[in-house]
Image 1: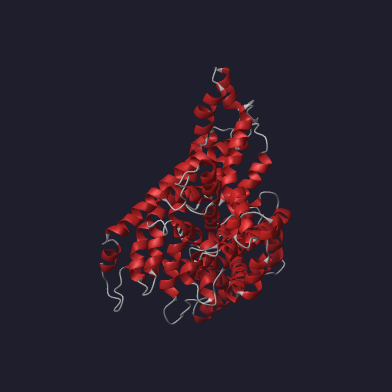
Image 2: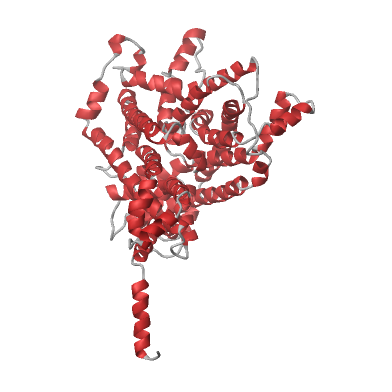
Length: 575
């Protein structure tokens, strides 16, 4: 049959065969572009735009790098990243080796305390160390002066070494996760072969075991470097009083009144480019499967007997984790329940007034608690919903450019939070949306920031589901949306709950993005902690910090019950 009638019949067949859910997938793809591409595109455009006219100019770059102190801030960040990475090697690799490959005692305790370090916001750890090692009133320096009579402090936390120590103490869990996960795969066969040839335990470790996991070590070092140069909270608390800048604190200063958004965008470009380049190197390193192939995944893995040395290794692990968790938690707890933290421990110094003031008298602090959990819950729901949909599109090949969507979902991982915030400011603060200072701009920025966590977990979970069950639903007349709602989502319930918690927890403490986007009524707990630190009221500051820590610990405990033991560390290794 030919002619107009045949054409109309062909179109009728195509319409009957058309899956209307395709429009849903395309709409979700547009949402992803709105969240990821538009802010970055506007960031780049803003860096080349004249403030009043929007005309092309290089003046913003000249202003951003026309002063020595601005260039010094960039150099300080690079040196800080290198120093933190080197210190993380010293902290993390022995702990990972001890837990994964030796008969060191207390492995469960070490893993638990590493998890405690992992969930501690770095800026809260910095506050704890200010109370411990402040040059005048810090407890370590007060005890030092009392014992020795010295006038100079033992350690001044307001210094470059102090900042390096603090960031390393809360960044080494990333390297620990990478190295311990790789060491868990190393078979004992090659170590046995080295022993047969006369190599001792230490020679075998340094010449056989650790070289086998070198890609994981290098990958983890790069991640810790990127974490160090992208942090805002710890540098703001330590570097600014010490009178030196890094990139993130300099960006914050560009936003002081009057805001110089164009100059900030230009100044952020090197940080973004360095992050992208190093993440690319990290991905190339961890894809080098030649090292993994040598490990023999099916081989036997026996712990290395260290004899008396195992207690020394355990003591070192406890020292590191005491510095990272036990001492800061102890001093924060003492300050939170103290009338005056400098008076020390004593029943006459105990009080609940700090918590009462924050929760019932200080309206802004109370609202910040509500805001933090409300925004984090909204972020987790949106991120998981979007990630599940995009992962389903990519894994089931529903549209031809699924690979691009996968890339966009993971792209925010290489965008520092502070750079992402500037992009959101440039894209959505001006009219017509005018979202600056609203809850929506914070929720959207948090969603974009933590979308890679949600997508990585959703994608891995969907890969494990046989598509034949969805096909059965469609054969019985159901749509793809019905299959997702009635088959895929119930099967993924446990995994999605774990992914939801993994997004919720960091969203409650996010500072780098929030500090640029919050308004008078949208302060979060992280921003409130930063504000209280500027007031110098450490008792109330510690109380608010303990509220955040306590809530995080409860949430992690719920995750343990629902998803399984160490769900954060295991999942974190794959993110």
